[in-house]
Image (cartoon, rainbow, N blue to C red; front, side):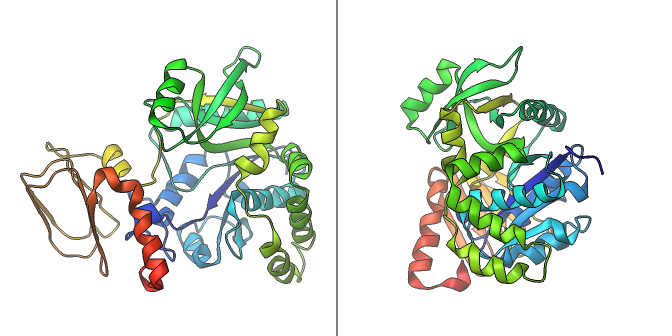
Length: 368
């Protein structure tokens, strides 16, 4: 096998609490059909990366509870390409583990990390952006694909762009910015200097691992201990011993912010119809709607019937088999599952996770 090839990594973690009660800890959002197609979010992500990485060069990092579901949905993936983390340790540990496993196989590899729960509408433009990012990473930069903002979004982080690299389109990243207030976001968009941080990363594995060792030596050393025993009978024992001790931190905080300060991060602007499917309001924006602005989010089993009269801009997710009837309501989210029903204004879609937090406090584990 040629060295220096491209490998795709898909972190598939979390329970998607803003999409409760549809998304649960045992069956999170990336295992669901949410976009009106016959593919789940995870399957669609693998499909999107297929022009760039064959199944044997595609890895999924997921939790113990989801490993079987991932394997079932991705039968073409080799079993060893599903990396199972014993417990959630945030994105840096997950991505770092994948980088080290790939580096053992191909020390000159370029890897890209792409979340399992994003939506992309324009495949050719996405593929072209990733190819440009691969070229930029080949020059030694930790590379992101930044999304050209379409509006002053407060739910995303931002990248402050610096100068152009060569003839472009890649640019240096001056700084990573947290989720802003609306007024700050307006300023970002109007300045033309900021991109949304979509957490799409492309880099040479040796460059990333060197930066991980520089900034997070404890995390790097722990992962090194695990991967040193990866192909032995001791793998599970060492993984179970070391993994819980690893720092719990995102790759943005752990590596990318410090690397940007050192002038080691580049970004490739992307404009390919990207959305982070984070809540039900977003589904109401990206999916087809009727003449009154209502959206029905169908699943693989089509769910129950929806009857809407004099209702507008309402998102209905019928998954119990029952009739869901909406009369004279506007701007609502209605999610009907076998054991729980959610009703809330679309303006409160981001707050659905508060219900999950309350259920957790009450000890209602079977509902989350």
